[in-house]
Amino acid sequence: MGLNVEVVEFGESTRSAKDAAAAIGCELGQIVKSLVFKTGKTERPVLILASGVNRVSEALIRDALGEKLGKADAEFVRQSTGFAIGGVPPFGLANKLPIFIDEDLLKYSTLWAAAGTPNAVFELTPHELLEASEGIVRKVSEGDA
Image 1 (cartoon, rainbow, N blue to C red):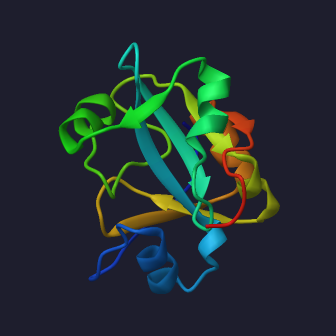
Image 2 (cartoon, one colour):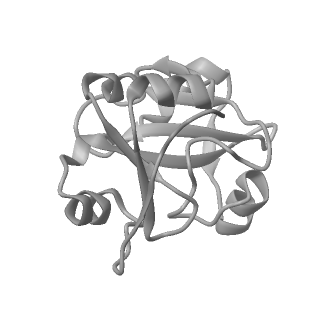
């Protein structure tokens, strides 16, 4: 993808946004949460890249997709992305998925995202996130969690 990133591995888990922000020493909002959902009717995977401070509004995504979202279990996430929950990166996935990027991530000069395992992350800019993920920027949250 032409990105020059350095993967940082921690002894402790960076599986949750709070854990990652604490380990890195950055703001919670700089963490890119990779959340996989399953559409209710067609059972397609959808990846939401949300700011660590935000809770995804399923209603906002439903409006964009035209169908409800449901929970994706661990097996569905692994089959859809090639990665386990807690380590899903924002790109480089096993399958091409619809990707929505939280507009709030664009407020930061640098972001941190999962690098494929529950204790590895990498730093990138919002521009790199947009380019590499080919996601659609939109409002994904009604406000801070």
